[in-house]
Image (cartoon, rainbow, N blue to C red; front, side, top):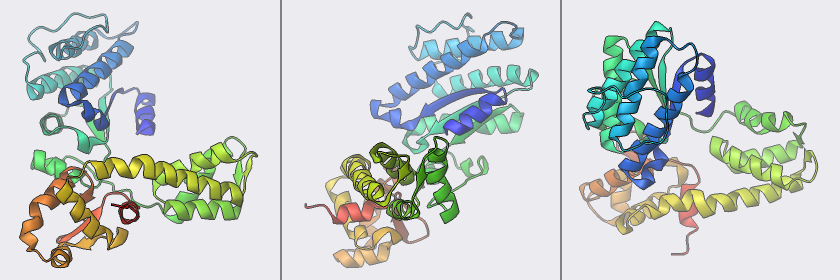
Length: 331
């Protein structure tokens, strides 16, 4: 997502970043972060020689942010009274985006929201974002949302607005192809003159399952572990152990802890099938219950982003390795 942001900025677009993980502080915290990031983008845009129309539109950012209680970042404009200050997130977001994107269009520019972990945003904010993107498409505003999230994100978007599937082009990123995975591990190190022995490379790629985040975790461990610029098999073995320990201490437990007691029982049943996924009918038969009795548990786990439905009648973990982690739990 950082790369998308840099590309958009390089093209001269106004970019605003947001991370759904901030939802840990509740919807208010996410809105406050959005407001602060908008103010920062507005301050950056308000430079010498700015067009009068664009400068005026920045007042809607000030109005939007002030209504959310975010102040203290002076962007050098007055509030646009009567615009983006109703107190309704959907109305205010739309008015602010309309004002900004209309002014940016005159400069042959655009407004881009880059949102990571989008599945963690609260439903009302997701609905507001989708509504604005829908209006932008109909009224030809240069406003775009670039979002990333877990495999359950499309279903969350569709649940918030039925037309969501028509607004976006979806790209699913799972395990990388071998060549791409190898490049993801080797290329960053090569920039600093470091290389991997073939056996070290193969061990780390195998440990990561070619999953992008895991490649990053194991690659970082290897970089921090190796005493020389040639990363050996022994370095890789140590890095694999460290990387796995890091995942077991934070990545997997954070998902496990979000599950209720009944949901954990459901996940344990799924773990028997590994990362390949499970048939919901098989899970019900395994525990001796009707399939319909597990519907609410399944839906809750999907909402929490722990599992997703890759096909009708099937569920899978949203991240690889979760089954092994659950199987290894002592409780």
